[in-house]
Length: 302
Image (cartoon, rainbow, N blue to C red; front, side, top):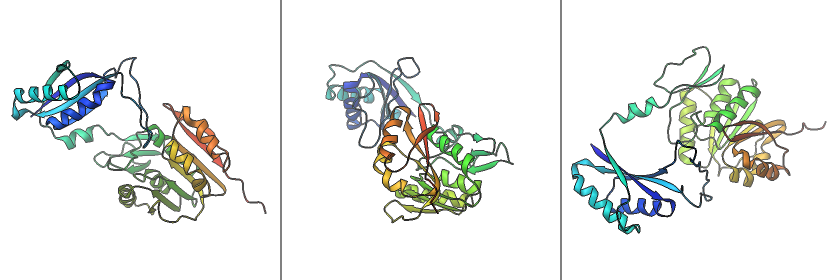
């Protein structure tokens, strides 16, 4: 058994309180939007090196304690942490018991099969495929990004369903779990390369490709890359997409096509401008505040 304690804190003290709770002996601490689920809820988006400058105006700090230590112990920790964070007294809080659970089973219950299109599904290994006649990618949540649930991944998968034809070559730049390259392979692409900056993603993509019986090369982004591809897809983030524009654009073969995602609607213009010297991009689709940018390279003149 554990005790979960939820404290209210304004943005200027929430992080300090979180750090103080960990220092004082809490098993874990998280910070959430206290207005979540209301009209005042405030989404926060950030990228590595460009994180939001402040937390939510009204934050909720949730700390977990070992129930075996007793109520007096966690109240002592709360008081010590509150004072260390600059509070005169412990801020308003509530507590509840958290029972031991089958966390694997609980986690699995949160991931159901995902229908991308009529012909493509993402199916966790513990589920039966809802449509055995469709293309079913077997994929479990893991260390690398990409399960099909995020709007940016769905936007890229939908694009692949539209453009992949048998025999085409595909580059998945920032492959994460390998989901996009795997989908391309199952849709008929014959030469697929996944590239990622993270060693764990490279390993995950290789494992997931093997599980789905897709022949897919995977390499670290530090390795040389001089090939060009019929289709290039990059589902990463706005800042890397802008910085890497020359390198990624150069991988699009003559008459090739490209799709970029991981871009908020408000950031689309920034990416289009950064790519203008290399390829002309346009908004191809939107979903839940995210966009898919698309472009083509002109065919070689004979």
